[in-house]
Amino acid sequence: MSALSEKLRKARTLRVEAGGFTFLVLRPTPLEREEKLRGNVARGILSLITGWEDVTELSMFGGGTPHPLPFDADACAEWLTDRPDLFNVIAKAVVDGFEAYLLAQEEALKN
Image 1 (cartoon, rainbow, N blue to C red):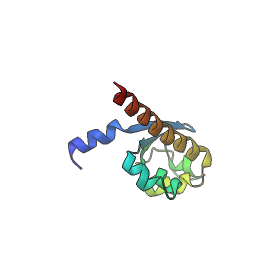
Image 2 (cartoon, helix red, strand yellow):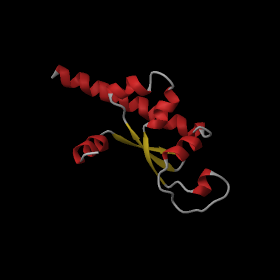
Image 3 (spheres, helix red, strand yellow):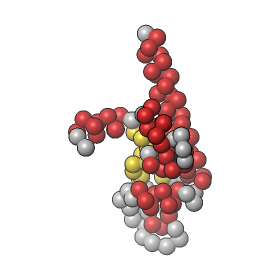
């Protein structure tokens, strides 16, 4: 991915606090909304998660190490499918982020 593409993605990144963790989630573009959020919405939202902070094996399951883990998209999806308390916060942030984007676009067109 180019440096410019990375900057564009970073500008769309939402920091979502849930359950003492921070998840980095892309606000979907209109095209991604059509592609990822029209079918299996839950899987689409999971595909927009690009990072996490303060997640350890110990926090994911009863055993393991207490050290922060590098982001793993597959493990994240597996974990969040069993944690609706966290997933619901992330899903709401994605929807709210997209709605805020649409409102900003409407306002920009008015000016």
